[in-house]
Image (tube, rainbow, N blue to C red; front, side, top):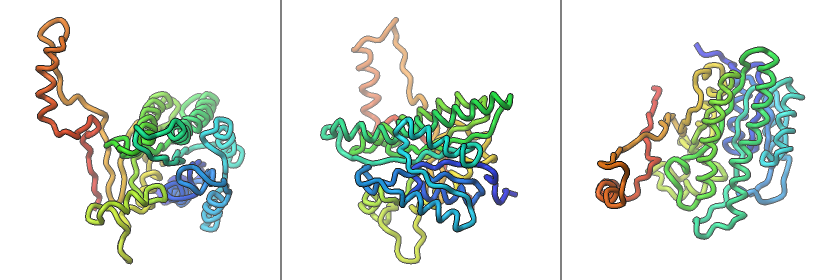
Length: 321
């Protein structure tokens, strides 16, 4: 039987926790017993524009406390190296140590690759990919120091946020898709590096209706999972459908889950496989020539769907009735 509060006595940081997915994740971790540092820079625009405000983080922290949990707000910019250090130190100073890091903060600046400016590229890479690295760096150093002092493994969990834009491509989001792919690489590298210290690192690809995605889902027919739900209907794209998986990955029950990528939305969790070899060709000579490659590869690709990409990996859908 599952423990009612499996995160009791643990401390978590959730970035981008003032709204949407981050808010739902912070609330779930608190419900499961964790003390939460609710981090949000507080800018109103989903593109990272507007005046920074303490309100989003403060409101979520207050909501957690009102429900009987423990939480403090943090307004730091995770894409700033020094502020990411201060965020991790805030958790340690307030609650004694850090046990869980959920990286969720992000912005969107969508444009086709031929129209995208250098600033639009840099800003999205900075917040998503560098932001994930910054907090991971300081959390990892904290756990490594604790492990050396303890003479063995300690408790540590990292849950990073990737996207199906990386898995399946997204024509108008080259910066976002690249950042989310980089986060998967960061996650698997971190998982290997920190396993000996008792720390796991996993990534999720969540599908949820938030201020960052509401126009995307509004353009999709309801029959295909888009649109807003009718009054009284369950919203399959509510962020609250994603947060239980984050709570699980942050828990002791997920000790053997490491370096994984999971797709989650509604009532579905899918475990993505790493890219596999789809076909293999060997030269009849010492090395390939252009002509031999043309004879082998051209007919092979002519038989494949024109828009199929390497990322169309099989996933395992798991339903619990």
